Amino acid sequence: MHGAHRDYIYPKLANSMEVFAKKMREQYIREGTYAEAKIYFDPVRERRLDDTLQKLHEDKLVAAVIEGREEFDDVDLVMPQKTPFTIKRTDHGLVRPFYIRHNDEEIMVTCIKIERHLKTNQPVLIQFQRYIPGRPNLLTLPLVPV
Image (cartoon, rainbow, N blue to C red; front, side):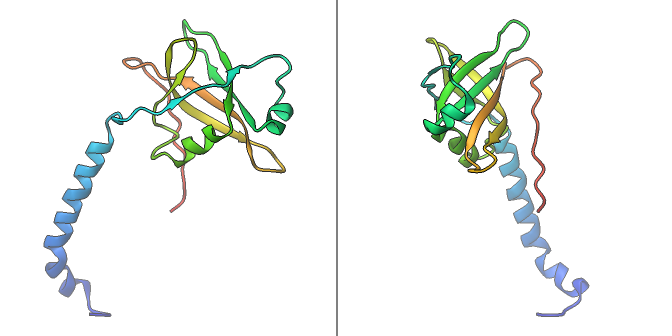
């Protein structure tokens, strides 16, 4: 019925719209929990003094920084180049917790920002923050126009 008035169409669609809205509400509630499958990142090594962003970019590696919090220091790592792409392809990748294996320890982190090279648009730096369950964790949500 093209061009029909909404007062005529709405009573016919109201029931199916309510079912769809209920289904969407249930889906949003389920998404508000931690994901069951953990995603692990294994760093190549700790970052050294001669690991500049340009050199790592040529070697197809990415620098990563886990920013320190109260009792934790900063951790500088070198990650494989596939790491930022895994973050971007994951559902809710910029707010979801990931796990980095470092020195026989699993560090729970969230991604703050992915810096890109100006010319090649390839990732060169990933900034992470420690995610500590039970404490306030600041998350920055990207706004995307729809």
